[in-house]
Length: 423
Image 1 (tube, rainbow, N blue to C red):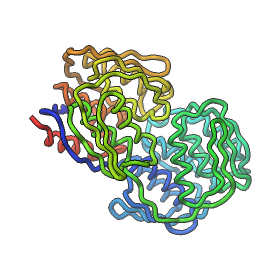
Image 2: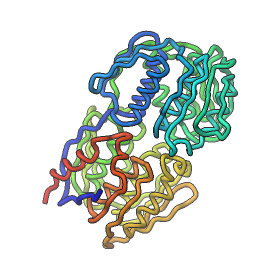
Image 3: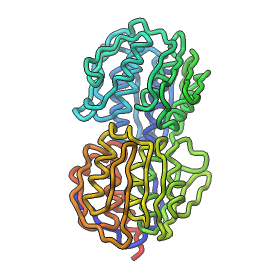
Image 4: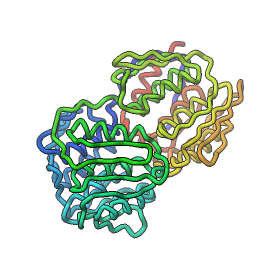
């Protein structure tokens, strides 16, 4: 698909879908809770759909009405014996691998080819350490999981592979007779996502949750169904907010304000550090472009999903941007370092891959050129390439449908944004 450029600065208000990260955590807690949960502002997209379908296969009662979900909890006991298709949803596959350990009969977790290539051995070993029966010859999907002698207790695991492994274990922690203690042998990446997990668990009644630098504890307790409103997705919000930065416009995102739960709400702070102005209220965030973008040095280990967005904004800055602390994102949906560098290089922007990140070296006054960019089955690359196309003509992507993973309406939203361009 060829992507049209903006005619000038874009001024707009944008409604962003509910947070996928929060929704999937809330769905797991609701599924394991006693009683009924009502979720509102549910995230759209393939990842959430995969989670809902898999929960149904585990015997969880699920009813959907627009962006609302009604979940009948299983009180900590899931129905085993089925095969769960996580499709391309890494979060779903990891969370439900842990949840499947609560079922007496073996459950198989599988997914599409791209998901099967993503390593999950650390999670599998951790579950074995807790007493689960886990059969995964290659440390990837498909994996078979059953309760075995699951009781909980203390385990060790690395913290620099994926915070989703830690979150998956945390969410079954309250239901283990001996609770859970995770001693991390390395520093924890994407720490704000673990904080989200702890917050959602607490909202569903779990108690005794502690998150330290190298130790995470979850005491035995239980979940109780509740009414829960999911805040706007901060990762998705980065794309329209970046539009303001790149086009020297002004974009406001509603539903994501002061006190937001998600760490990725810091994107506005990153844009401010690069030269934009930012306004926040209790319910909204606005980024205003100033025409004076400059590069920064930034450790993004805690906000790694924002790396593609920041890198594409950095292509239009007046000086070099260096992103560090994110070597682990080579194992996301795509190689988010190597593929980013290759995509930026394809339009004529100098980008250099480093061990734990990348460096973007724009040339002030240089004119970039169009290119056909691959999305590598990665929704975040597709939406980030669409940011380059705001200014660079003749940019196209090979698979626009991949945005369905998190924001199916993105292309329509982008078209509406272009209508707000001031010529």
